[in-house]
Length: 315
Image (tube, rainbow, N blue to C red; front, side, top):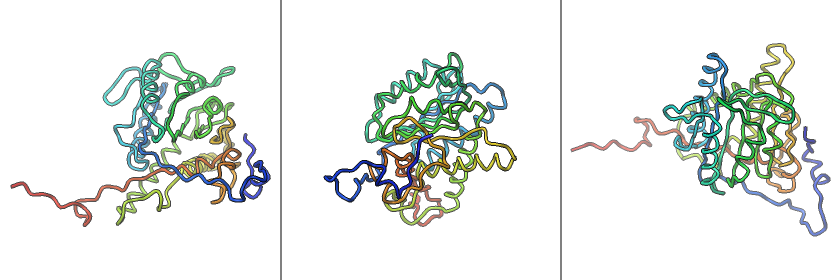
């Protein structure tokens, strides 16, 4: 677990010298020109998990399009042993081909989010993600994205033993989230709770309806990656409390590049001064996630909406 430094102690935690000015270095929130998403669905194991994975996958895809401004054409799904309509197989060969393409074509002004949904295990030095055919370990997965140039990189490992993926994936400027720590091998509740948070956000958005002006990341109070992580991890914790069970999973977030994830309860309270400080970002997990805003496109106007364009009559 990464040691977190409260905001009021930040000045003593970050080295300074006399040449530095009193004001912290500012990092303005950067919004990508385009977001891409890759969802890898591992081996389900049985029909029950097949149905559960499919339900979660549908919510994730819907949320990515309607809430995170990802074009449906920019969402790639790897699932199963054979290619189906709209999906490629989740085999090592297909994974290598797809990740090579993504790393090659995604530029610094774009974003890539990657989600893992399935089962994993911890064996000796490595964590593994189960695939149809030979499995891949954390180091093999991390190598697939080592040359990724995207300015926004978010990795969601929602499978069991996913905590062992944090260290090999960790890099400065990258957000890495795992459902568990490296020693927790039970099936996690995190992916279902993440889908539930997404479903609620979609419902809240639908209830709010279209606004007079399009949403603007620079003006509107939008949701950050940190918000989404906190809300999901809190739901996981409450679900164990409701069942009167000790939690068997502890989600981690690493975004300062030190390779050590931090649990939600240990994340520092992030204030408006430290959120844009480059010095603070090197010390505290959660700062990059806090300023990575999830851009939300406005829902399309309904036919009887005054803002909707008038229908044209054919002669």
